[in-house]
Amino acid sequence: MNRPHRALLALLPVLALLLLVVLMAATPPAPPPAPRLADLPPIETPTVELLPTATPSPSPIPEPTLTPTLARREFLESFDVKTAPTSFLPGRGPVLPGEFVYAGRRIDFYVGRGTFSADQVRDLAVKIEYALGYLQRRFDVQLTDRVSIGFYNPALAPTSDTRGIAYTHDRTNIRLFYGPNDDTYKALVIATHELAHALQAEAYGREEQGRSDLVLLEGLATWISGEYWLSLSDSPSFQARARELYQAGYRGNLAALASSADSMAAYEMWAGFVDYLARTYGWDKFNELYANGRGRAPGSANYRGIYGKSFQELYTEWYATLR
Image (cartoon, rainbow, N blue to C red; front, top):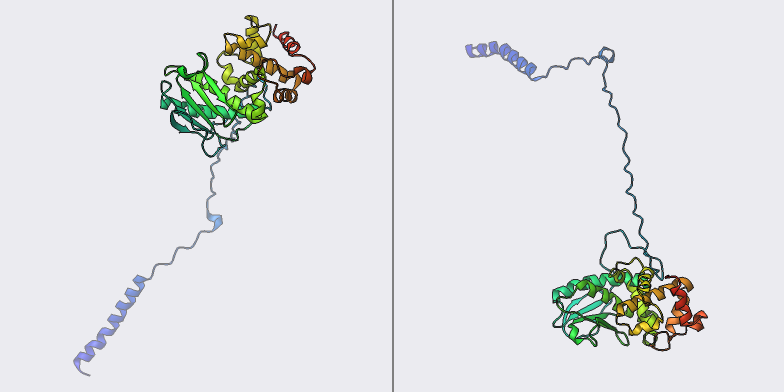
C-alpha cells in the first residue's frame, strides 16, 4: 500500500467523528417531562361581581287628544312621523286659466296674475294635499277624480267678499281669490272648505249636491274642514264656537243668516247645527236629509219628513243647548 492510501485510511476515523458531532447538533433536545397535576399550585380565579342588567322601560305612548268634533267614523291623528299621502289619482285635472305650477298626487295647481307667487302656490300645494288627507279621513270619503285649484286676484271674484268657489257640477275645479300680500294660511283654510264641497259631491252625487239646502251645504263643508276652520277662532269645537256666536247675538231665524254681512259667522253657526243633528240623531238620518234636498233655499230640506220636526223646531231645540 503506498503512502497516499495509508494517509486516507488514517483520516477516516476523524471524518466519522466529525459527522457524528454534526448530526447530534442538528437534533433538538427532548422536552422536559410534564409536571404532574398534583405538583401544580392551585389556580386562583378572580371573582367578578355581576351587575344586574337594566331592562329599559318602554316610552309611554302619549294619549291622543280627541277632537271635540264628531267624525263620520272615528279616527285618531297618528303620532308617527307624518308622510306624504299615499293615494294617487292619475291623469290631469280640469285645465284652468293661468300658469300650471304644480301637480300633486290628487290636485293640479294653477296661478294667475296679481295673487300669490308661483313659489307660494307650490308651498301651499303641499299643505293642501296633506289637508285633503285629513278631510278624507274625517268625512270617510275619497276623491275618485283629480281636482284643479287656481289662485287669482280678488278683483276676479264674483263678489268683493268671495275668497273661494268650488264648481262641482262637472269635473271639480276650485278658484281661490287672494292678493299677493294676503295671509297664505287663511287661503289654506278656505281651500279645505272648497275641497270639502268636492267630497260632498263624491258622497252624495253631483245632482244631489246641486239641490242641497244652503244651510246643510255650507254647514257641512265647514264641519268637514274641522280643525283647520276652528283654528281661525281658536275654538275647541263647533259647538263651542256656536255658543260664542249665539251669546254675541247670532240667534233667531237660522236661515236668515244667509243674508248676514258676516258669512263666516253664518257658516260657523250652520256647522254647529249640522254637528248637533249628527250627534243627536245620527249620520244616517242626516245623509238622507242632505241627499234629498229640494233646492238651495236655506232651511228648505225635508226636515219634518226625516226628523218628524220642522227646521225651526230643530234649530230652536239646538239653541237651547247653547244658552
